[in-house]
Length: 186
Image (cartoon, rainbow, N blue to C red; front, side, top):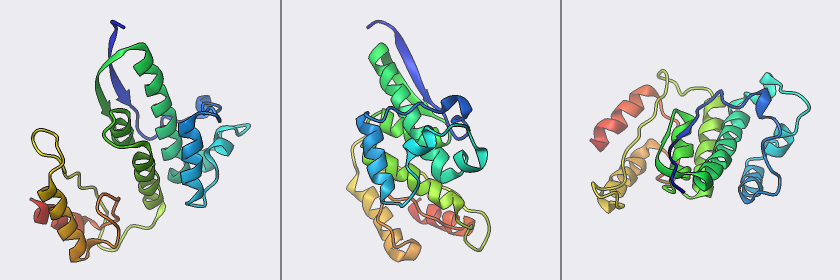
């Protein structure tokens, strides 16, 4: 293999009518995604992907669109890795999370849960106090090794009442709480 490539993982809006039928039912990632998704009591992805026609009111709901895009993108990445030497992996928006899985930084289950949880929160009403936001906080040191001190800092702010969720899970916070969280982690 001599061809080098940069793998770019797309964001929301990349699953469309032309994407229908993209999921192979017998692929281990598709089967595992369906198992994980069943725990959320959501429509099976294969049912959505096998629909006779693309229905924006159904397919573009965040709880459906995000995991479909994640899974199709990850399957495309698998093909690219087989055909090329991948020099870098990047993503746009939702593609950030796909890139984490494609690069091996997150195991499949964790990446799928992250995508599905973020999609569920996109459909929930925003917390009072204005629009929400994201805090991307590194949990690795300069050598890309897990840093227990950084993990402890995140755990401390979560324990201080930011969320009842475990560290590493997506949080639904107002804009002012996101700013406060970022300040406490700085």
